Amino acid sequence: MADAASGLRAAAQALEDLSDTPRLDAELLMAHALGITREALLLDLPCLPEPDGFATLLERRIAREPVAHIIGEKEFWGLSFRVSGDVLIPRPDSELLIEAAVRIGAQRPPAQILDLGTGSGALLLSALSEFPDARGVGVDASAAALGVAHSNADHLGLSNRVQFQLLDWTEPGWQDPLPAPFDLILANPPYVSTAAELSAEVQEFEPHEALFAGPEGLDDYRILLPGLGNLLGPDGHILLEIGYDQADKLSQLAESHGFLAECLQDLGGNDRLLILTLASG
Ligand code: GLN
Image (cartoon, rainbow, N blue to C red):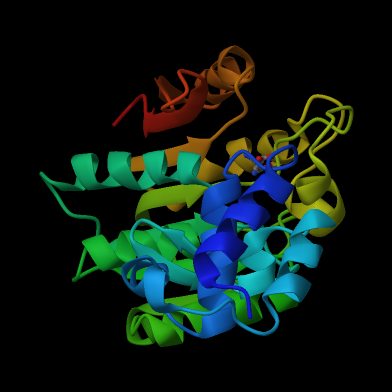
């Protein structure tokens, strides 16, 4: 029987042309096949056989299925989130929102947090894990996504501080059922242009309603921005994830609705986060 170490080497080679992280992908899949953590796999690698079922998992990855879907989870902000095809897989770039939230909340921790388009709940639950006295509301237009968010809240032990609401912001009066004001509003809504070319992993396996927002990718922000002022407490902050080429347009739009806007870049140096505060606050 093949040993795990050479199985990993062969798998990483097979994934080289289609993944940015071939070795990591192979390790996560093999650890999953063995039912152990990646750390345990690396520690015991010299003595392990290649597990049954590894080849099947590798085939799925070669067919471009994301690792997070194959193993059913994704790490974000040091926490493990369950994911499915009903939610966007949490991206490392989105950790920038949590970093900013922690910095802003260091002086005055938020008591009430709102997450618009919560999906797996990754942003809201990570923020709640940082602010032990805060309560959170996560909204999404997808009942299936909220099922995933609920299961994450349960398994992270945060259910008692979070509430999820099915809500579609394309409907008039969408803000009315929300228990405003909020000290912190997080949002990673769809912002990809319908003309954008995405990798097969994203295009074929992730929910399009969580990604695409019209020809400029701004449709959801055009709906959301006019309503956000009414949801925000006087010294509150809004943290919006944005596309690399959207900072100018969205800052202008936000300013026209009474906000001050500051833009921050992600690790790749791209514009990724807009921080809004009330200009009159
Ligand atoms: N950053 C995401 C991507 O990789 C897009 C997320 C979104 O539209 N909210 O495509």
